[in-house]
Amino acid sequence: MHRRLKALSVGIDDPVLRLANGARYYLWRAHDDPTWGRFINRFALSSPSLQALWSGQLRLDLVEGAKQGRYDVEVGGLRVAMSFIAGGVLAGMLLVLDGHRTWRKAGPEVAELILRSLGIPRREARALATRELPPLLEVNVSA
Image (cartoon, rainbow, N blue to C red):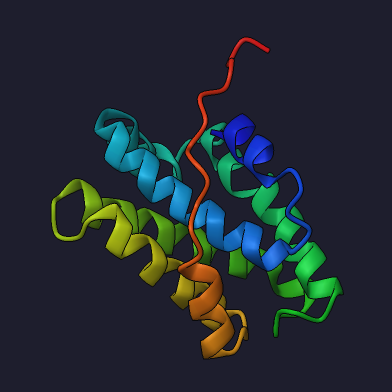
């Protein structure tokens, strides 16, 4: 998933858009591969190796956005923000996996709420959270 997100982020300069897309891609992936989604939902917060999901591209996008003044979060508060985002994404994945929401409905809702919690104005958060997503790429995992 890290490789997919990195490949899909090429050419996107806005860390806020990358964050919104990343959240939506996790929900999409959970829809496409429910076994993966349930595994991530079960172990992503308790397994040290899986906790890296929340400290890779997410951390980079949060730091960059905070430095640009896009987020109303101090750089020292980014660990709490990462935890909040992880919880929101995992909860959104569970809504998709349990059939309460489609990934196309839950993805933008989760992304918008995350962006708004970081201080992005409502109109901008909605616009970024509802942009069309490029296809979720298959990436060679042995690379």
